[in-house]
Every structure is written in structure tokens, then in C-alpha cells.
Image 1 (cartoon, one colour):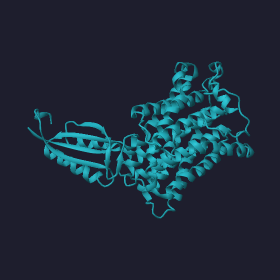
Image 2: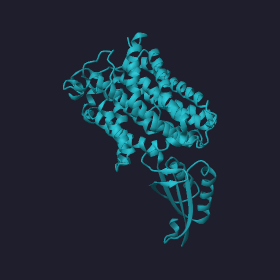
Image 3: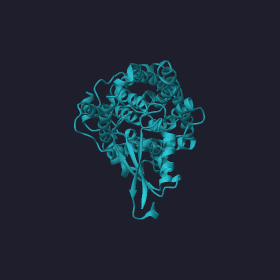
Length: 355
Length: 97
């Protein structure tokens, strides 16, 4: 049934005529009942599997680095713009305190990760802190898949959650640095701040949010074909490349041991629970709760690796990147998102969430 | 005219630090290219931005080249994938280097 829905496109003709937030929604199909737990794969996931399979079989295929770069830019701007358009019509005074709480969530998830990783006697403190920074920070790619997932189901969510991605990206990275260096990183705070706040994730998401807020939905209409209508197509290509990258990283898995793989598989579950609890505290809708859970469960592979490499150079960059790219990202995309949604759709309304 | 050619192959993450170091020591220019390869720290395949290398070339006077080499050695050899070597080269416009 859901497959039949997916085949009739994901934006109705009347889309732009509806109110501001509605006009730019990726999808307008009827809601599914809260009890219905989606078991079939979202089509974009198949592109990820294609990349993963091709990579594992060493197929002669690689997207040029510049193409991957461009896809990331479009995804980041799409998510930022969509959030900005919704923020334009929202009460900022109510949303800003929420952002502070969400930033605190990044620290909570990072500290939990660090505490668990320190249980392994063979993992040096620097590595534990670097991995914790990756897991406290977030993955925009995973967030984009979660959005596509909600759109396919026709579940509403707070589009301004894009701002959550921005505020979650940074705190855990700073935490990771402080856990190793104290308050004096080896390259100096100026370099660290440059790396953390001027990475493309923060710049483009924040930039998209600002443009969205300033311009509003009507004036952004000319951009809809690229940033909103093409969202799933861009995401599919991005996931194809991520599959290829995950496959190349998978080779390194054997060297890193069971503890790290176990952490990369199980910690997302814990992160998702923390995200759900915060979402409940912030009174988000069911869709918003899924997004915050996914953010809690996801691990950074863009901002955190670059910042940690410079700030904590003695940490082995292979450990965190392999865990994040080869285990956690595929896990969240293939299993995590439907799983979190399935559990949330049963439990969340039961505890009064999303009412 | 004789000059030294200093070549550094290292992780992409170090690009800004590297350029800063080279210019601070008084080099008058540099050339930067993207690179990939394999070494003691494994394959640097460049299929993802964090696992790419860069190759920086500087032509300068010998003492400048040796100072740069020494600084990079002290700061980065322990923790980063880095290969660095010096060659004698002949240039036509000595005032440029």
C-alpha cells in the first residue's frame, strides 16, 4: 500500500498554493495511522545499497569528489532553506530556548559515549574522546534520510529541526577537545574555532536558514525545483556515494576489533533514546521526536573528523571514521530510522508526546 | 641559480597550517596539488575528503627550506601521515625564489 503511494510522486500540484510551511513540504500525501509501522524500504535506501554492494564487489565506479561535494552542498542548503522558511512564520522567542536545550543534548550524548568508551582498557583516552565527539555530533546525511522517510509516510514534523542540526554539530566536538586537552588545544583555540564554526556544515545550514527566514516561501519559489523538488534525487545520488565510501571503510573494520563495532552498533540506540527523551521534554511532534532521536543516534563524519584531526592529532582518525561511516551510518539508514519510528509511534503518544 | 625544492606530502587536514608555516618562514610562493597514495598509515585514497592527501612544493633558498623542514618535522611527524624531502634544483629567475 505504501509502495503504491510512493509511486504517485511526492509533491502535489496544489502544493505552492497552500500556506507558507505547507507550500514547501516535500510531500502532501495523507497521513498514515500512527499504528502503522513501515516495513518496506524507502526507495532512496536502495541507492545506498547499490553503492554499498558495488563498493564491496570493487566495481569500477566512483563519483568524482567534486560531485560528492556539490551534492552535500545542495542537501545542506535544502535542509537549511526548508527550516528557514518555517522559522520565518514561527515564534522565535519560543524556539530559541529549545535550541539551547538541544545543544545541551549534544554534550549529554558525547559524555555518555566517552564514559562507555573508557570502559575499554585498551582504548587510549584521546581515542575515546575523539570517538565520543563524533557520536555527540551529528550526521546531516542521516537527518536527510529521516526527512525523506517522514515525507514518504506523510508524517508532519518541525522543519525548523534543521536548526537542531546546526546547534548539535558543535558542542560535542568542543567537549571532545576539552576532554583531552583541557582548555588548551594543541593548535590554539583560534584554529579550532575556525575549523568547528566555519566548516561547510555549519556555514551552509546556517546560511540556508538565514536565506529562508529573510526571503520567505514566496520569494524562494524559483528555487523550489532544485532545492525542494529535487531533494530525493540529490539524496539518492548522495547515498550512492555514501554506500561506496562505507564499502571502502568496511575493509578497515577487521583491524579495529569487536568493542568498537559493538559500540558503533549499540550506542546509536542509546543516543536515540536520549533524543526521544529530549524531544518529549521539548514537546515536539512525533515526526520531530523521530528527527531528534535520529540526530542523537547519528555520528558526524564531516565536521568532527576535520576538527578532531587538528585538535587531538594523537587520536587515530581511522577508528572514529570507520565506526561512523562503515557501521553507524549504514545501521541508522537501513535499520535505525524505521526502528526508532516504529518504537516511537507506539510509545511516544502513550507518554503524552506529540499531543 | 641553485635553489632547494621542498616537497611535502601530507594529510589534507593540515593544508592551512602547512601554507601558514611555509609563508611564515619567508618562502615567496608554493604549489599545492591533491594527491593519493599508500604508506605506513595505510591507503590514502582521497575518495572522501578526510582521507585525501595534499602535495605542497616550495622552491626557496636552502636555509629557508631547512627551517621549514625542521619545523614541520617537530610539529607533525609524530601524529600525521607526512613525507618530506629536499632536492637541488636550478632556476632561471633567482630573485623569484
